[in-house]
Length: 117
Ligand code: 5GP
Ligand code: ZN
Image (cartoon, rainbow, N blue to C red; front, side, top):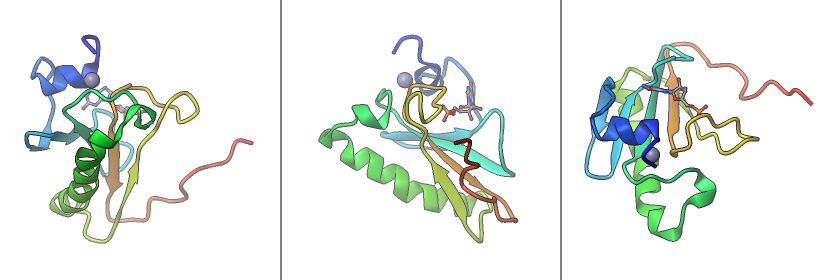
């Protein structure tokens, strides 16, 4: 956890472009945006992947979902957006602190995945 880049962002040790913060979650713009709107919503609790989440995390994970819609609108996604949570090696997760990508813009984002297999 001490090496976790997102815990350091929560602690204010690494700067971010904040979208929203409360006692449970933080939302900030992705440093390498993959769409015109691309921000991340993270729990303040260090949960490495969704596979590590427990029933105690239900409320904060639900709040992330609800805030995704509200913040997407606030950030200019008037006509839809996409949420992605990558998990583990197969999910190609890079940062092992649960984060929901919220992606959008004016134009459709295209297919969810390009199959490699
Ligand atoms: P993952 O592949 O784990 O689902 O996504 C990790 C995301 O975190 C990537 O989109 C990457 O651009 C973003 N990211 C990594 N380090 C930083 C950082 O220091 N600041 C911000 N704002 N985003 C980061
Ligand atoms: Zn963390």
